[in-house]
Length: 367
Figure 1 (cartoon, rainbow, N blue to C red):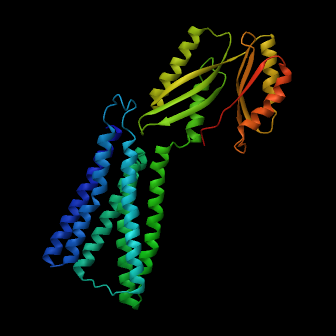
Figure 2 (figure 1 turned 45 degrees about the horizontal axis):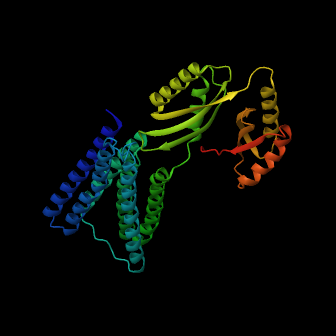
């Protein structure tokens, strides 16, 4: 079963659990003639909304690419997660308002054996459902499922807190309903904000994880003929579609035919292992005993010794074009690229006094 099918199946389980729980509460509410229990049953039906949103979002995200959206609709999943996170955040704010009211105007809860049974069943079902959905969301890397599972867990926690405060009230005549509710509401609001952060960051363009960066660099470096991996950039168009680019170092003695074959193999492996549509660029390393190789060594050593430079690559020298170009990756503390370029150019220019020197500042796009 593919990822989307698993997400949809998990969401249907969430809907079924909420509908069954709502049916149980409604039946008990009708038999006990309790409006509160019946209204709580209706609330369970609304809890299924997050699962419905997840299903709709997953279905829409699977639409095939078209002319206006050549990379597909995978990012719709992030919008689904945002909507669910807003629902959680709204629930937390509403709960906080009601809890604060209870702090200033406490009311004594009234529980019967029937209502206690309903509450305990609701807590158990919501805890099991929330843990299951959230765990599946983490396994499938689905922000929408994680948010939906968290929503169910928070419902269980709120209900449990209400039950605990009722017990304290009955035993010691101390009202904790409002205080516990306010504390839990604050936790829910914080969690809702964190839930929003993940899909929003994906839409804005988050940095590549250090783990994935190292893995890709190692895999590409393992190819025969590759002598360095640089400029890794990834764009996320949904959990299943990534567009990326990187550069590799190869010796300048390598033929165009061999370079073609090498870059093709790298691109194929990146797609098969990571689902990345990868463009592979090439930097040529000067070899042998000649002016270009000697100049390359001097330039690379000069720049690498600079305290603000963490990486040097992409050396290019052409007497025909009367130019020397090299790429540098500055330390994150460097904010003025123009000043850095001027400083480095002044250091390199004496090595080639009659040529144009181009210092290209690259940036690290990974964690």
